[in-house]
Image (cartoon, rainbow over all chains, first blue to last red; front, side):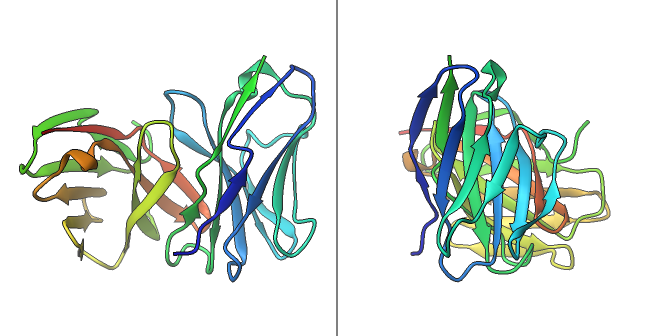
Amino acid sequence: EPEVTQTPSHQVTQMGQEVILRCVPISNHLYFYWYRQILGQKVEFLVSFYNNEISEKSEIFDDQFSVERPDGSNFTLKIRSTKLEDSAMYFCASSRRQGAYGYTFGSGTRLTVV
Amino acid sequence: SQQGEEDPQALSIQEGENATMNCSYKTSINNLQWYRQNSGRGLVHLILIRSNEREKHSGRLRVTLDTSKKSSSLLITASRAADTASYFCATDAQAGKSTFGDGTTLTVKP
């Protein structure tokens, strides 16, 4: 079964530092997403990405966040200057068609900002 | 209440029993999905039901959707200890932007 792969599984960073979370979506998928889950809270949508541009983003996805598909396989989420409240599990997801068949999520990266 | 609310918040049953979880939402949707999450792990997509469908089965899972009541239920039959996890519904009112509920924590006792 194809998987969405996320690295690293756990990252600890100092407040104010930049972090890049990496994802390898399923190879024939065209739509890519980032979600996050603060400990004990709901999974929240951050951003969707298609055809090399952002198609939708939430209020959470402010100027500190950016996404990129640097090559044909990776999809990254960058947080420029991390805050304590950015500590969360970040999930990458991909889909072949938008909203038609559901989404395949990765195992997540647990980001801890200290 | 918010889009995609599950109830109960927690459910504890014996192995072999059935588990039913409910999800309510507020806006019109394109589809509704159910996911499982084991403690501290990723989200596993279980089943997607489209707004024009009323019932869907997958193995021991049965999902119903009542768009007039804006609600869905997930039934797990003949539960196993390995079914212990949190279960979330997520709605797509806008394609690609799923709204998740708070989840139901299911404990299946051996």
